Image (cartoon, rainbow, N blue to C red; front, side):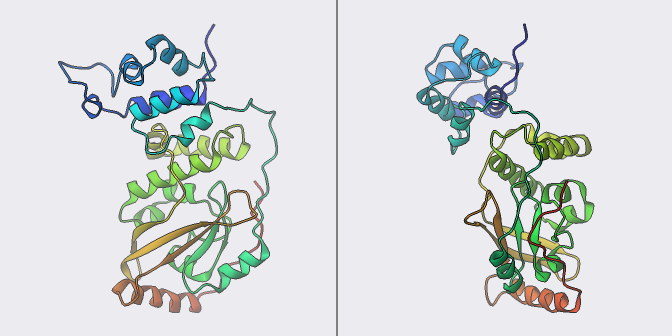
Length: 284
């Protein structure tokens, strides 16, 4: 009887295939038929039996100890094994349920509108829930009702905006996985992953890696059609009292060419009609 796949097994297999033998001190002799490490190599380096590791990947044992997972995480060279540990405590799949409605606190919506830098609120599914005019001047897709995953992977104009597009796309997927966690029966998660898997080869490629990372700040370079290349620092700050909502803001180092370009975008934003900034996300 076939075993039902598990998140833990899928994750272990994907990460194992990304580790090269030489990275863990295994000499490569001749041609290898599998990408990355073999199962028995992971088991040997982690100090467990090959049969037990096989059961983990096949979903026949879903409750390994923390010590075993930490040992495997070291072999797979994970910078952070918290996501791996969380997979060992998978919750049973629940019956289909309605999409949760995400609400931006009124005070946060006012704060975003008043910020002198591009800022928006990003939901758990990377929906844009609130945005100020300067954010929309930076990218017309940064407005309420849009979704960052859909835009980065499906909108050519948004893709052209990022100088380092593949890096930005990978970080976005890693943050999305971290945000959703093991809640894979969520209807919005199923909708987004299904749509993007069908429509975007790049999404399929990156999703199969099972990368997981924090929704964090980073340095970003935009190829803006009006002001040219602009180098900005992005901050992502959790909004207290909410379930996964983040305040995202872009700012430039004072006195730089990028700071001047950001001021110019601010002037352009004042000439445009301000976008709507409702405090609730659209229904799906």
